[in-house]
Length: 465
Image (cartoon, rainbow, N blue to C red; front, side, top):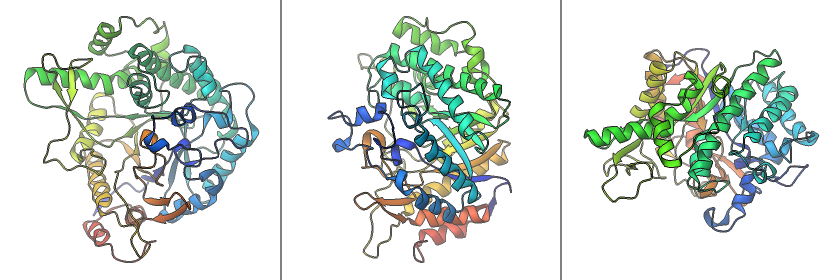
């Protein structure tokens, strides 16, 4: 039996645009993902989050699912355009009222709310004024944070500023595969800095209220291995690590951008004139925890002569013999442990929450109306063992949130990918707890993982919860 500490927090996570729907109700403004998903050719089969999981209208049903699951923590995001439709100005009271009710209902069930202020749904009005590449957006985010601190701060147990700023900067502004769909490395660099700056401003804003509520940021981190032990591959793996990991970790915890990555970026873009005196002190304002989203490692090799590569490296596909999820992502619990140990060794000791961890599976409903997902159970069990190993090695791991409570709008993949431990039949919005829901419920109930629990779950015995 692998037992976790008695005060370890077990949870589940969601994001506003992925589940809420109701995009034009109660005064909500347009977000960058509304605009992006309604632009032909950008999202799988033209899917949008207009309805998503209809959580805005089915909130009570979903809270009941959380209670049945047995979570002590629920990580969700507030939609900035639902609170400030144009990104600034007078708050929309109906938007605040929705989250006010949500928080109260969670607390009534004994569930601690962990609120993420920004899970990628920037108000389109702010995008039209420059978006994250513009410094002003960081100031507007701090104002939005202050609105939420005032509205919910007496009851929220944990605050998160941003979810995965690397995704917004790199995938949304360099590659253009996510909203706002920009392909400009200089814009990506500016976005990354202003996202981090806005985080620091929000931390300062919370502390200015006198609140001691824990606040942190969520990063998606990759254990990066060289494809071979050649000097070139090792060098490029280190460079890639700077791009995905150290560019965010170093300013947050060391008040400096990594020198090697700065030099590389300046060779590519030419300028970093957006970093002003005092910015790094603001970015590194002391926070209370780091949220870690982990799914899969990266394998990197040096680009061959003449091979297209903006930075000098190429991210390899998983080896042919490597286990992968149905989404094609390599399964490596060992890399998960390595990420946690590295944080403790190089940036810690610091409190850590696993804020997302889960697997894409091609789930289907059987003739009896059940959804069996043994591959997801195996993935979760292996990563729980990896997290427990990190705990045993001294990592200050405070909690674990499975991604995700519900199948949902999976960004550019639309509704084609399923991460949930609850199946959502989108035409009817019916929720069907999967076998993995039952498995995680047992883990949470006993506070750990036993081999026989996993084996029992994999045999798919008994009816759905």
